[in-house]
Image (cartoon, rainbow, N blue to C red; front, side, top):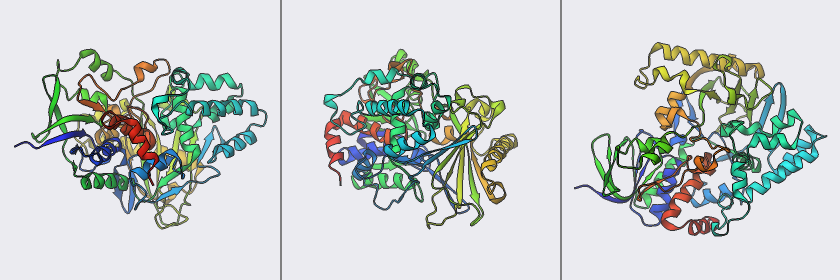
Length: 499
């Protein structure tokens, strides 16, 4: 006899797990199905020679007391047993743009003061820019955990306002333009498409406060899973969903790759909307809806080198170091694989013992899926020597570039592991290994939008494609989706009252 659930959640990424916690807490019988052996999506970790590396979530923001993510973490009990390390208040991110370094300090007063020092003749432009950031944030009621029934401000204006166009309009100083846009790597910015509201939310998120998760991002996934279990829910791994079974225009069950059917009243997909459409047979959902989701443009993928260091050889850097070879932080908008690498982000793994030295670090940069697509049909770990040679060659090139700024790096590496766009595709399920899911486009804000509701009345979406990527963006997507069941404003009230 098939066991029936109230809600089945497909995918155990952050949004799926948080949805599972919220709904199981509200009395729904929840089942979360995960295709991998490990839960967590971008929270997944892997271990090499004593180092624990995270798939994503290399740093998070807005976690100081009273800030939005802090309140959300309290609601999900994510401070218990998990340590967070605040990054350097004088510069949580350091940007080397064409050979000149700039630091982004924590706190907008500090940020403003620092920008004034860098650009003493541009105070007016900096003031205008920061005012517009503030205006944008104040239109985002959900982001501020405010009651959404009385929406404030001109939200539509910021959806169609292009980031690069706006920044160009407030200053003619070419270097200031680059510095103001320097964080665009963490939203995979495209200079002709990225809307200002995304830029504003991301900058606000990190400038208000920035932290690293000590030990393992997997602890967050485990904590959420344990809470679901405590609430009577179930989380199963190695349960890839093969198809959604539709009867009378509604989903009645899912069938997994091991030929088991699980029935429920409602279904939430935490996987990419395009991948969700692949689970629905032809003719069972409106063709126009399917095509719209399948044809959405996605953000670019990434290439990462996960490095294990010799003991006491490389000083721990309590900041991220971002290097742009050219004087252009938008270089990925006209990405050229023949000039690769033109950029890297270096981030140290926070030492659990508080040492002044790093045991491991990561290098991360852009890469197009097409560069590795020739190996996509080979099984994982069986892609042959050509693929291994490609990975190692690219890793050595990226390490060589980073060693120019960090002379102690190359000679103090014990070993390294590599992730390519195929890795992100295989383990995160994102089309072409996309870093942050669907691309938001200021030229087509309505077309960029994905609703939690679908054309099937009992199927819902959650996750980074819905609202915004990252720890806060995905958390808000879970709130949006679960709000369809229990009311968004009821949830916001509970979160604001969490202690």
